Amino acid sequence: VNLATTNVIFIGDNGTPQNVIQTPYTAAHSKETLYEGGIRVPLIIAGPAVVSPNRTSTTRVNCADLYSTILELAGINVTATQPVANPLDSRSLLPILQNTESGGRTAFSQEFSADLATSVSGRVLTDDAGYALLAFDDGHEEFYATATDANETTNLLGSTISLTAQAAYAALKVQLASFQTGSTPNESLLTSWFTRN
Image (cartoon, rainbow, N blue to C red; front, side, top):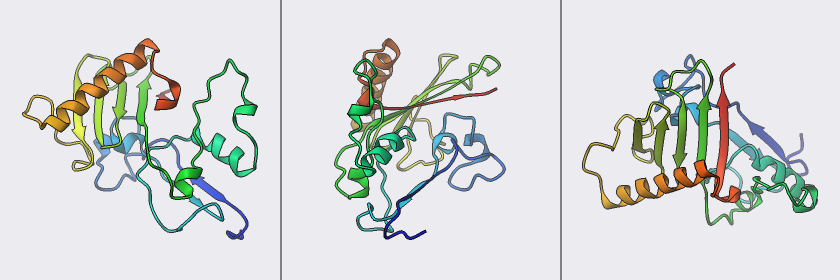
């Protein structure tokens, strides 16, 4: 493949299996969990659309964003491909590829199945600062600062936390509540649902 003329996109499956997960994540926080090791995947893009290659971005994206990205790379008007009644929850990654991205989104993931214990199933919201709120279906919550605690070993709830962390927790709670009632605009959230068969 000639990367001077061809854009190549590589993305992994959701989460890393226990038998191959690497530090900082552990098997307890791997695929089929709501923890970072269970929801993060590799995404690599190379080619002429990438400005300043060989760099990384911490901007949160979702595989649904590849739809808008590929259409835009092909010169197709993304909004023209959608019926008016269908909301578009895909955002082009070109600003990231062109190194002009300035803002991010809150990421939402959900794990559920009829045979999944309520202490495992639930939802997680993560903001750009790296705060993650895990709301399990059995009613308990966990709150982590993944920027400094990548494997989510220190639950911040139940301890004294900074005003910044308190504000992040409150904002994520509001977003979770609005998402559950359907009042959150699609474009502000990255959504992923993982089910077990």
